[in-house]
Image 1 (cartoon, rainbow, N blue to C red):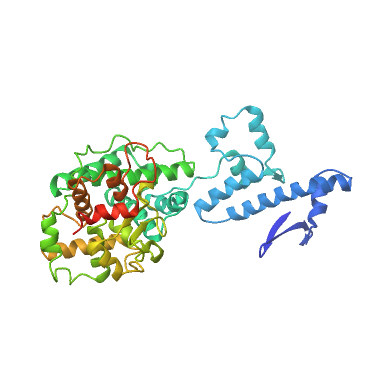
Image 2 (image 1 turned 135 degrees about the horizontal axis):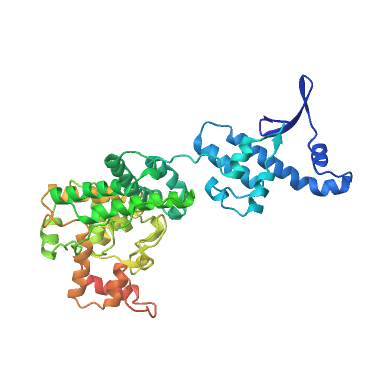
Length: 423
């Protein structure tokens, strides 16, 4: 017998003197089922034919030079024969009757077993070596459930630290198969980071993030590809000191420096309006950048913005909220009633642009300040004004250390509170 493909169709041929002749599939199946009853053959033929097709497709897929594809075809061929693929060492430990079932299922021709079938059913297919960079390529598909609901910008931010961790690890230990990663390799990587922490003033947190993302990629590929490797990924993290909070800008600095006439003229309009909108809302830069026209309400008695998952996921469930607009923040949103298209898909470049501008123009209160400090300034002003903790947390999008009861303050009430502290 021979199998040939014409486009997507598989055909079965029988060897006769000097040529192959096409075999009608059902006739072949009936003969294989050892029955003279057409009705009985009809009942059995459908499932049998489907099983044969699956096996043939897997064989054809295995006829390739690609190691991963060959190994995948061996798995599929085993499944087509109603067996789960196992490595040869595990097959050897099967109970005798199960082992014999696998051996009996291997077809033979001219007294010789089909080697491809034998490799699939007895675990002889060679597992492909997956290098570190290949592991990352496989990871994007294997971990795709982690990107559900994320915007393109969020996916990019999710991918970038993993790309960075893999690139750094390859730089230190080389692009070796993940099955060959040793404890010494991981210690070399840790030592490389320790040198940078000591000599370049980097934080232990940066090193730990690399270790976490590297481990996530390797462990996911190991699990989902069923490699059953023991990866040396434990006891590597650095002890981190207490996180240093980002300092708030003082009210005097905001009014006398940042809001000084012409101080922000060199900043593009979208970035400038987002900065001004932060001052009296406390919204995160990424939340403002993601606003769309339906989330911006400028008419009515209480102009406001609605922070909700319209084009991107929210940081937490508590981040969904409505914030009244007043003062310079209301003016900024009136200048951008449809949102900030320049940064809607790239909030990271927004922070980089604003922080660079503030530093270069002497508008950072200290070297430790960043754009995010405006959000902290907003909360400090509310705290100084005696605003209730529940209301502060609702406006900031923070969790409450107890169950939330009722709807919270009305928009009109929130507006009155913010106006009392607005700049």
